[in-house]
Length: 151
Image 1: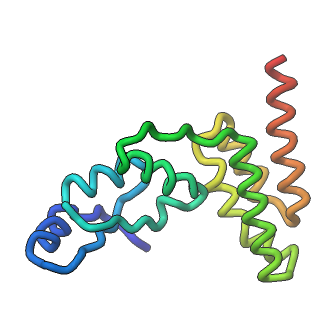
Image 2: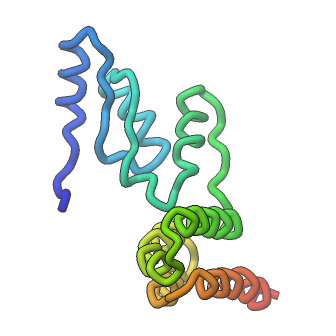
């Protein structure tokens, strides 16, 4: 398992020493991290890995900051769930095994729910699914149950 922190000073030293483009990588979790790495290291580009798990919006938001634009807002819970389910459907299409894919996809659903109100309880429910239909029902309950509770 990965542990420790990326050494952006070493990336900066490599970028300064070479005439070829250097791609920075490590500890990129937010759009601000992308901007900070570019500024601190003067690297030609930034590679995003685990920071994008459950957060594909990170790329567009980072492009906004790099271009000097206001960053687009974070997605709503409904947008997150819609994207998560589309991601799951693509996995089903590739793998074909509904239960196996649902079991493997539990971790992805966990990443998509990170930071949402009640995320811990939501993840507990999602980590117990055995079908994508169960995930859809949990997301629907979260969205519409929250609306009913707030009314």
